[in-house]
Image (cartoon, rainbow over all chains, first blue to last red):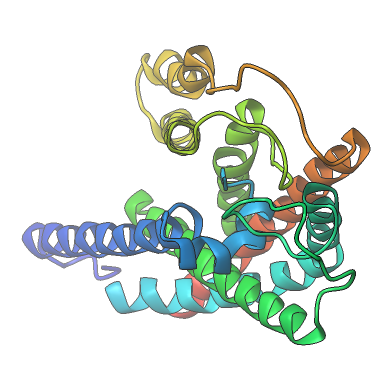
Length: 60
Length: 224
């Protein structure tokens, strides 16, 4: 991307790739935060209990 | 790019998760354990029903403490990596060069969005506090966090006259709607304990987010 002679089409392709990678990462991150902080399964709740309180997620 | 985001988030999230586990062990967890003594009349905290007639151990078993600490640390590592993926994903979306110092600013933004904004309507709770329905509080928590994250993002990166009104509206909207609250106040733990817990959990979260943002920015640059 630092190559000033790169064509605009390859630049927009790499921008698309970056956006897709960012969205995949944020989706995965939301899934992990949901599992640790929100999911209602009793086993998950009990395991994450003290961390949920300390991170101020609504717990029970 | 995906490999770079995942590596930076994993490294920063795990390190910040370890740090917050140590901090919680000496700040918030002792208060949770004390609150559970008030909630149950002594002994182990459970959510299935509070049978006050059951014989309760005065001190939790050492083995239980180890298991509980390990489970809390695991939850912190998962939370750390999850928040790190959101932050590093946001670095990539912004298209800006990010290093440690800029990462620190992103971390403080994460603290404002994911700790301060939800805490304004739903302060961190100790076990044994009367509260509104769980699902509605979780929904409002997410609303407050996403509204603040979106509002800060528009204020920081928006271009045009609408930047200020739209950014402020997103920040304020969840609080104008208002958090779900119970009909009555009440907690089994003394108010002083609740106050200490609120202060300590918010300060620990501030340290977590600052370190997470700084590390995430540093690793994002290093893994370029």
